Picture 1 (cartoon, rainbow, N blue to C red):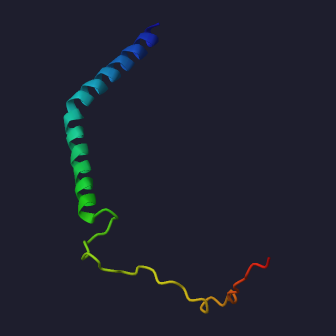
Picture 2: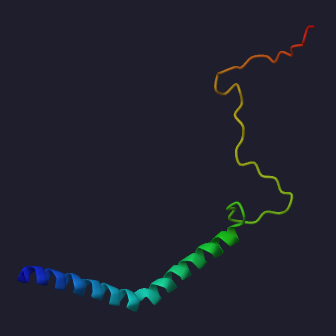
Length: 87
């Protein structure tokens, strides 16, 4: 019976201690979370809508990926044939 009461008392003390620490540290935790979120929003706003790190001039054209030529991979597709319908 005594061990049961000790267990209940320990669980109660741990619960109250965690609750007290959470109330004590919650303002600092919320401040930290809002600071990190605002930093992420600022970084995302500075990068632009598509994640570009630097803004480009309007109308500028950039090519990020060059298409592969058909001869480089050794696989040839063949000729294009235009078919006509016969009635």
